[in-house]
Length: 476
Ligand code: SF4
Ligand code: SF4
Image (cartoon, rainbow, N blue to C red):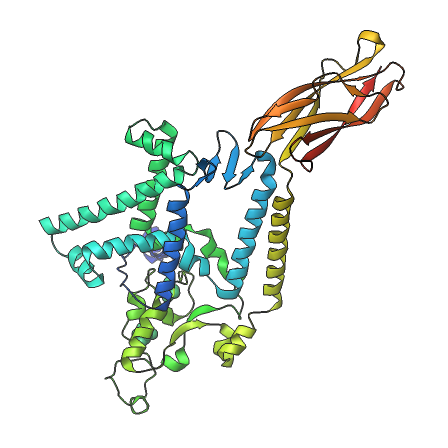
């Protein structure tokens, strides 16, 4: 049998490789979300205001003559209102991360992507940037017309105005962010007098351009391709998780009709196929196709569809928060909510409360004093006047309050053990003092060897502020 020539084989080779690769890298189609009003949009805006008031305003709050919230990395101290946290308080950062993670698990198990839809910075800044865009270029139809139209002075003016406004917001955001790490009033003065340090300038520009790029240009692509949470959130869903759902039993068959038309006669469901739910969607998806990973749970499609239902005189809720079980089994609202209290949710809630209460109690009971005892390694034990034995230590005394304090030092654990250095020491507020301490015992008071002793450091103005630290006394 004749073998096919190489040329023939080349011709017959399927062209799947190239075709597959091309389909994987879909060119982005610009999305023009239509403005929407309604209950959920109002909630989203309430959260935009709340989060941004805290973020932009928090950096300017004063407390006891200093910035109320300041993460002073250079000095390795975090100030949060009346509390000062040190690197030794790392456990509280761990608790904060555990609480954040558990909250995310809990809210996702109960109501899907609540965080993404209402409070995520990407959503919040995109909302602000879209509001600016609408203010300058108009709503969806006007923006589409503007982009499709030719270059003109008006178009250039509108685009320049929009980008200038975006950049102003973005740079202010970058400035505020850096203002949490370096005192914001000084930073403000430095920026205006062109004296800001290289690192401050870098981080203001970096964070500013990240905001401009993510909220102005990337938008839904951040959620679709960059955010890891979008990828694993489906693993936290179960059939009783509230998700934004289109009700196909009620909506289908979809189709246009006149207002007041007889649906039975037309054999149509409630969906008028107006496409509003797609037009308002910031990620450009059609929720009628079912739950998709691109859905950030913003509920804009609920508000949009409810407006259509109102106009048509139909009941609201063709698109609504519901669960897979509620849809399949026809559960009513009370039955659906009851299923929210399932074991998984109760376990998450219990662990979350335990961690919150433990962390709060630990902060409440925290002694604002830390002491480290370091033995002087150069002189293990030495004989001084009168044949006494002396050991030398360094005490690191950390006053974690903001007021200066005087501390009394004492040691016990051996007969005749006494301080041969000053018994009181002053430590300024929110700082550490390193104090050399000499301890002595009388000759023959202890056998040669290593003996356990205990230092006590106590604030003179508050009896409860005291720390006991163990160490050893060596006799040779
Ligand atoms: S907005 Fe409501 S009625 Fe209009 S297409 Fe979407 S689901 Fe159908
Ligand atoms: S489908 Fe609805 S809830 Fe999901 S992102 Fe689009 S508008 Fe928001």
